[in-house]
Image (cartoon, rainbow over all chains, first blue to last red; front, side, top):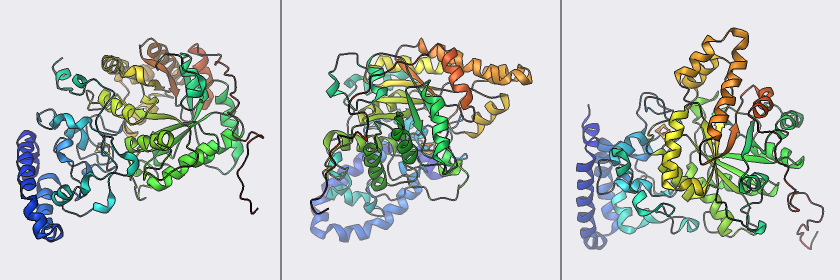
Length: 176
Length: 338
Ligand code: SF4
């Protein structure tokens, strides 16, 4: 078992690390903006790429939503589905396209059940991917807000409004 | 479907399918097997058989990643002859620019029902070396068309002069993992804009009942019309092929066994019988609004199945005055120069 998959099976630990890192980076924002976002980006892109590649098999889409998708990179889904899974999942839970791989979204769902902080974000409607951010450092696009920019028509769409609040949490339905 | 009375001008698209569902009638849709041909007659021959027994005809968009006549073209032929199509749009072959253009084009030709799919992967088809696009996923596509319809703008925010009026559909597959997540994914699709749903082939009834119970508990059966996918199995070998080779199709062992035990010349009959039984059983499930028949290479059976399931005659819907896309009184805007 690789280090990556060992870590990915500890989603609660990862979400804590994510939260801490997000806090840390946000606090550094004034400093980073003073140095210049593009300069810092040039510096941190390679290490971010290597680290996230090892842990998450990251594809550098530049708008990281890992914490909303069970700490599982949705771009590793061969169909690049951001609101998965598709209907092609095999009987054994493996991917329709790559039979040797477990469906990314089956894993995302299972992991989200162990993520008390961000788990319920799985129900959010994720906007279409902005392909022009590809290859950018997601920490920087987060600070500049570019990762949250959506096409004008999509504005204001994120949470599930058709369910009552207590229904958006499916943890309870698990125990039945 | 919500049962409150809505004046006709407030219908989402006013399609025949929508009218039937709003009237609380059990709807029947069927899939047209797209021809590998440039001859329109092949589409019309298939449509003639289907139109007598169903309320809307699905025009598939290279399903299974196999190339056939395009769904836009089939829809153009169908609407021209007064049939009611459900235009399927998948995200596999076209990016958001192309898809939005097709949606407008389809609506201009009289399409009023649109089914938004992510699409089967290219590896499932006969040209696995193709480039896969998947610029959007099905939920993005649903929402994009909803934005076009309700806000009168493209995804980018640019204005559309005359927004398309479309009854929006989505596909779901309750029969594969992660089972507990499937009802919530349905909720996401409804949130994204789905008005009706067509499911993957339903053979596993107990799984489907569990799924529908959860859907009812969430209250979302009131917000969407669910048409259950059904179809005849030709033989146990066909069933075996489908459940191993076609992604997402689940067929329980009992059904395959039943087909295996049937004598050779009776197999097709038994397959049809199973299909009729499935229809009768899903009809009893609360929250099911209709069926969607997919009879790959067995079109001749569709009429028999629908008849034997007791679903004939189909309700005749009065044609709304705006139903003919080529109505003569239509005033085409022309530039004064020509
Ligand atoms: S089976 Fe899962 S990983 Fe494979 S294409 Fe579908 S959603 Fe993506």
